[in-house]
Image (cartoon, rainbow, N blue to C red; front, side, top):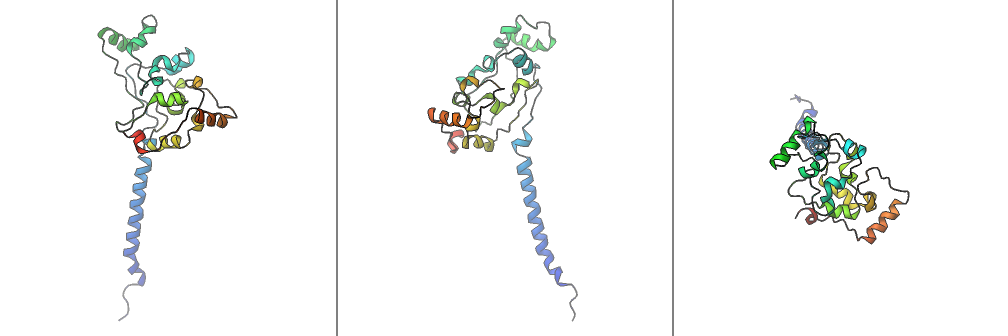
Length: 215
């Protein structure tokens, strides 16, 4: 009896199976890539209870990062400035601004302003600001040009892969400690020589072991 169906019909199940595997693989890769912190978290810029312009305070007034975030040099967290820090100036300046009412309410009640954290690492990740700052990592490496931001925005994913990229090759991010808060600082032509000298002098050994960040 002659064959009813052509031979290529027998290949259909195998082709369907291969297509299904490819489709599932593409879907998984898509979720893995476009669902990563680089896409989901970069650009995050929440509205704060008080609109605070770093462009005005840093670039125009010349207030240094350390005035509000001095903890970055001494402790694991940089810290969000307290009401007392803000009122050092605003007890005398800007009293008429309605946007500062939450600050005045905080000052009178003793309750802190409920700022929304922009750079918030997961609880299972350990990060010490003072170690990085004193090693020579500038603010701009992780936080971007905050001095140009009217609204603070997350510019880096701060994912594990992003951190490991720096730990595997910290030299491009190292700078003199006197320039840590200078966001406009540009490395000189001999920067890699300086960075290598700094690595040797300060015995910088950026660990890539799990327990360095997951304790």
